[in-house]
Image 1 (cartoon, rainbow, N blue to C red):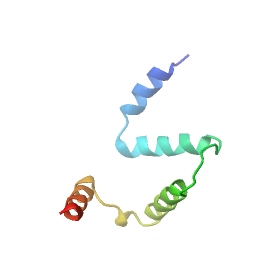
Image 2 (cartoon, one colour):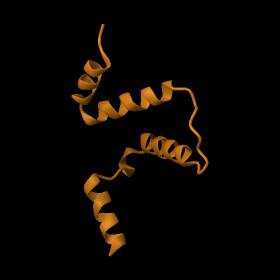
Image 3 (cartoon, rainbow, N blue to C red):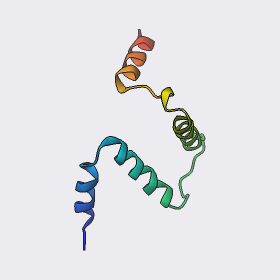
Length: 73
């Protein structure tokens, strides 16, 4: 039987896109037990859906870092 450590190692060896798909599938498989008082989870899911519908809206980590630096002055 495969152990969680072995599964984790295999998962971490996947390309980023496959890891993100796996993570999303795993999260969706869990019961909704989290409290979302500020609706952050709903917002994250909405943004994920938006990106699936229009992948051109995505930005790179470098672009995000640049935008954050620009806001901080």
